[in-house]
Length: 450
Image (cartoon, rainbow, N blue to C red; front, side):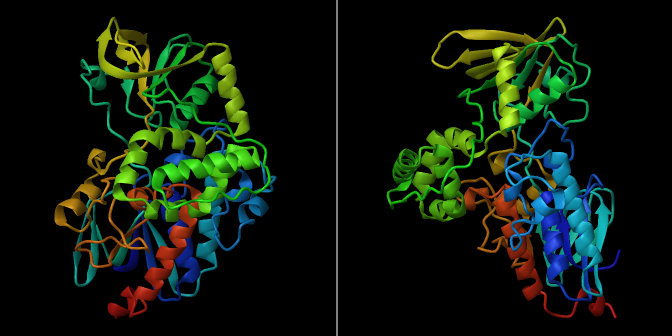
């Protein structure tokens, strides 16, 4: 293919939202390449493998993909504003939005899907060159890295050969991860967050009747959304993490529902995070992260009820502890773990162990060739916490890229903290698109080749 103005690497929710905003804002001639290795747009891990039992974690009223039109998703779907709809429906919504934006783009503004995996990128005076694993490359004036949630590593414990057997799966989204398990076979899900919840519900939908063990260091399950209450306005002082905790407690006491206090923080969480000192951020991550996550990222009421039923029937057993080692015995996966507060190890023998710890928390745990290439060349720099890239306020990478590489979502988490859900992604996508349209208000790639 010929040179393009912008190459977007990643066709999940983040990449789709950037493409939509570019199609809405650009004036022709303008050419966009959307690179997605699966060939399926607008899905990603969040909405691609989702089953009917997998619901959005926010009500429909908060899920518009367009920051300037808050009611867009409600009108498109016909859902009640407080409804928690299937995630697969939201994937269809993003796909329809992209199709519509492409059809109504200004004359000369084009979008091309490139089915492939970007494994490296280089930068020179002419722009960015994205190299694909399948062969070939894309020349662009700028590129956006919309890589989504990058998979986390295996637990760094002795595995006794388990990791190389079919008894272990690195993710519940891995093809076949939940297939072939005996109806009454026990399963170990490593992690107790929303990824575990999805896996447990998917197993139930398949008719699985065995015991599901969920194990994490704290044994904390996501909280459940409640009914909407009146607005709560936490008063945030300038005293770091302790001040944040005091504000949340005080707001909960005044409003009667901690959920309202957390939700009221959402528009200002990034600003609060930016004001915390480096040590306060580390303190938060070390001591409060797990508790914050289960209160912020909550289950839909129907999902919470389903999980509660599984626990009541003792088909889902939640364990708090640290894995000591894995092994394989008699065609079963074996986990030795030390329960929280105890000294002796306990043993779990299951038909399959599945890593549900979710996305990588640290950049050093990411095994992505494109990310590794950018770091090795100095085109990207780790942020101070090592969670993602260092960027400017618009998402441009700080490093040797010189404003030619941008990112959004997970790779900005160290600097923004709240950055992975649709309310944050849609705003970041609009900002990145506007910056690109402004920066590239020069002869387009098409004109440069005439």
